[in-house]
Amino acid sequence: MFFLCCSARNDEGDQLSFGGTMDEKTAYSAQAPPTLLAGQPGEAQRARLEAKGPPHRGADETDCTACVEDFAPVAIAGRPCVHFVEDTGKRSDARYRIDVQLRRLVVSLPSGAGPSEIACSISSIEDIYTIADGRECFPTEVLASTQPEELEGLFLVVFTVEPCPDARTLCLMEASAAARDRVLELLKLVSMSDSRQPWQL
Image (cartoon, rainbow, N blue to C red; front, side):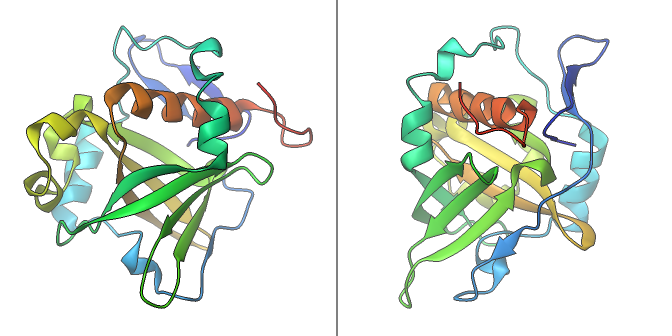
């Protein structure tokens, strides 16, 4: 599991795995039900993800702090993205930010009644899939709503919400593969940092 103090490559060298348990509560805004923002993978998608195993890291994805130094302040302040409702493929403009003090990934989606928000503890993230892991990792409805040139920006976050052990998923799209990789690297750096100390690069 994506965890604050445990991150290591496996023996094959091209996979990144995280281990641990959730130690922060994930909270949803009362303004909208969680299903508007985070979905529960259907049986078919769950089987595909389980069969796929941990997401792969390409050979050109290096672990470095320098590559996110310029990106971090923007992601912490908030970046625009596209959010997908996974069972319908509906896409909406949204914003995400990384709350480094509380170690959370926060996604805000405008609605008629005001902004709806999901706050996912970074320690509760189990896996993050990209299109490089295979199209089968994403719901067909999402793929149908995406242009070919947009696929590289997709990422699917798999996480849990205490006390329910069932996985939830959150599908977002960044502007480019480079921006997507930087936010994933930043999430990893935050997860590896000491939660007792203020986070800094």
